[in-house]
Image (tube, rainbow, N blue to C red):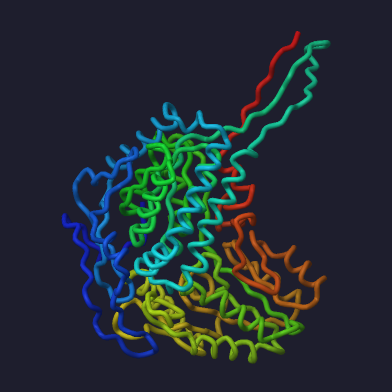
Amino acid sequence: MKTITPTSRRASRTNKPILTPARDGHGNGARSARPAVSAGLAKWLAKPKRNLVGGDWVEAASGRTFEVFNPADGSVIDHAPDSKKEDIHRAVTAARKAFEEGPWRRMTPSERGKLVWRVGDLILRHADQLAELESLDNGKPRSVARVADVPLAADLFHYMAGWATKIEGNTIPISVPYAPGARFHAFTAREPIGVVGQIIPWNFPLLMAAWKLGPALAAGNCVVLKPAEQTPLSALRLGELLLEAGLPEGVVNIVTGFGETAGAALAAHEDVDKVAFTGSTEVGKLIVRAAAGNLKKVSLELGGKSPNVVFKDTENLATAIDGAANAIFFNHGQCCCAGSRLLVEQDVFDEVVAGVAERAKQIKLGPGLDSDTQMGPMVSEEQLRRVTRYMNQGKQSGACFFTGGGRAGDSGYFVQPTVVTDVKPKMSIVREEIFGPVLVAEKFSDLEDVIPRANQTPYGLAAGVWTRDLAKAHRVAEALRAGTVWINCYNIFDAALPFGGYKQSGWGREMGHEVLELYTQTKAVVIGLG
């Protein structure tokens, strides 16, 4: 399976974390990174990392590991098992045994719900450490992880815990034309799918693990989770909390490794009943092909190139400007639903673009563990190269870089928050998902002009609309081909709110009660009554 993998990531046999001092960084607000972690996290990092398989922590079959980097300075912070096909098979076998023979399916829904709830409680209990770990491994500001990623992950488990007792079937009055006078009792039961393979991305490592694990567990499935090779650490820490919560052995197995080896093996495994993937559309298509062998069920949450539409009648233009900046610069632009295409009505175009650019210039870049950091680095050297390559292509095509446009500093994987104008529809910077803090701004004339342009993308994950005209807002929301439309706001998430995309942004929905459709299957039962 093809995946984006940093070329500097190497496999090794050592497990000793290397917390080397950063080189001095300078320029564009990016500060040098020194991983000054808390004593508790330093102690945890010093422990050898293992896969969680069948309730035990085990090395990869090869004994090999790969390096985990601090994206703020490129130093090695830890090592994780370099798992391959054999490791995936062991984990799937453990999950199958737990599903078929273990106590998990015999638990009452109430017991299962209470256990899932305990996971949420434990996440909150260890919130500070999890936020610190997420910041170190992913690069995002610790303050953001503490108020967003971690509490949202806990809330997801709490929300899904309540659904464990509410997964119900129906009784159905049936009429059988060829059996006149016969009586039947017919009903449906919703049952867990079985063994689920879950592959999660690196942009919200802990939160994406929660999005995947919460509904799967509430529905009674067993899981093999493969975290992104760039950010495996919070998933391993979550595995410890799952065991502490009392999860039976084999119900959740966590295997680290690369997408083209561990990920591909999980997607193709014949004893996996369903695979759930969050990541790029390109890799999502590979997942579908890999799953075809045994026709396993597939759900996909994929890429986006989301339009954010600002009308001139917006009641508070400053609020819309702040919202547009948040839509693209939150999480360093490494958001599948990032509002990366800003469409502004021509009368206010200059004011809005200048306002967003000014906010971009004020963003403080730095290591996520620094208290005053507002934007951290890209997650990897490969992602840094990807984002800067798109910006260079935009420059070569004649786009105007209103602000930003390059790397920030010479240490770590920092990119300048960027606003681009004077673009044309066929430019790669307009059409393709960049997954970085790069905003493309275009002007439009009226409602009839903006709708087709907003929908002129193979993606359909999210969109934003800014207007005080309620009727217009409803018309635009209805016309936009997107799974989520935010009106006079952006990046609003809740465990009860379904999230997913149209077109090439994926199949199925995460969160809300809709997600339970992805992790259950319906059985019809008919009893003859004579």
